[in-house]
Image (cartoon, rainbow, N blue to C red; front, side):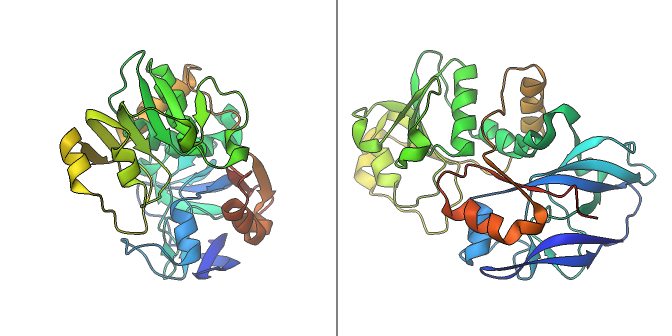
Length: 312
C-alpha cells in the first residue's frame, strides 16, 4: 500500500511524495486520514533545521502528530472497527523515511493501541486533542480565585487558559503580537510591559523563548513554580540569586500521557472544554508547501489544517 505524504527532504525543502507503507501486522489498523495539523513548535524547528538532537531525528522525514481519520482496515487483535473515527498521534510506517512524527500523510498504519476513538462530529477540531492533552499535563498549582500567568497566546496558550478557567483559576496571558491579543476571551491578555504583577504562584511558559527565564523568575511569588511547556532550541540558563531568594521551582512539562488524553476527552465530550475558534486556516493537502510556510510566518495563523480527503 502507498500513501501520499509530506516529506521534509532537508531543512526548508518540502515535497509531497508517494511512499510505500510498512505492511500491517497483528494489532494494527489502517487509517485514511481526513485532516492533519501543523505544529508551530516542534515542526517549525524541523522545518528550519534547528531541532535539537531528538530520537528518530534525521532527514528525510514525515512530520506531524495531529491527524484524524477513518479506520479502513483492521488486523486481528486491534479492537477497532472499520468506519471508526480516530485520532492518530503520528506513525512509523514509512520504511527508510523517518516518521518524526509521521502523521502528515493520506494513509497511516499504526498499532491500534496508539489510536484514540473520537466523536466524528468534532471534524477537524479533533486534531487539537493532542495539544489539549499537552495543556492539561502542564496545568499546575491552580488555586480557585487566584491568578496565574501563561506566556504565549497561540493554540496551546489558549487551551491552557481555558483549562485554568475550568479549574476555577484566573489566567493572565502575556502576548506581544497585537493580532493574537485582540478579542474577548474571558481572561486578560496583556503585553508583558503592561503587567505590573510580581506575585504569580504559577507561571507557565509555552513560548519556547529560552531568553525569558530571568524575567519570569522576577515575576514569581516566593515559593512559586515556573512550568516550561514549550520546546526550546537553545540552552536554558538563569541568574541564581533571584531564584534563590524566591525558592523558585522549575518544572519541565513534556508529552501528554494517556491519562491526560482521557481527561480532556471527557471534558470535550461533556461540553466543558471548547475547541472552537482555534483553527484559523484550512487548505488542501496538495498545497502543503505553502501551508507550512504560512503556518510558521503568519501571526494571524493560529492553527493550519491540511485536508487530505481528496487525496487517494
